[in-house]
Length: 228
Image (tube, rainbow, N blue to C red; front, top):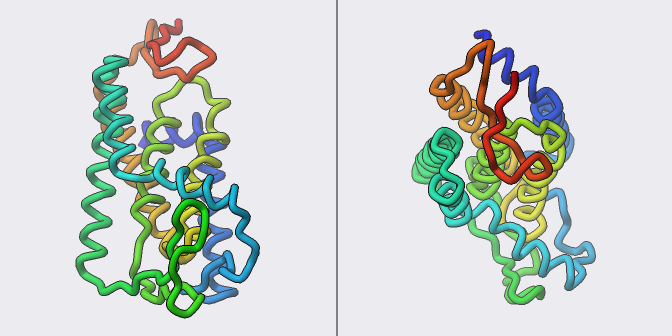
């Protein structure tokens, strides 16, 4: 219980932001309906913004998550941090697949290619299945939660949170998921990221004299910091 309290206290900006995001999303769902897209497809979609989100959304892709884990494990030689991230990715992926395999899902009819609308049968994205879940959003929040949990420089909490939220936004902007899908994905990623950090923290050798923590760029790129 103490470990949970400490993790929440040290990263209160991030977790408070996550709570605010989930509550705001829930409120929008209650007002607009659980299957509503928050970004109307009839609204302007500038070419440059299309290109940005088409590429940015891959931050939540499983391939990106695996590559990031490999870099942390083998390039930076950070075993605990890498294993924490790997655990969060695996647990999130399994949960997402279980949810998807136990439901039938309507696929969007709108696609993007090179920043432009490529195909739309009726001009409207038809995502109607409330059980759908955004795997990209889950991965993004799993990565964000683990990074926030293990890094020493806590000023990165809000930027990391905003980066994860932007992935969820990109899924709606590209008409791939509804707001409900985003909220479910975010909750899964946050939950398993939190659990994975707790599991990893039990392997660190904390003591009153010395502890090892992860740091972000600005305090030395991905090195272990000894504090006394």
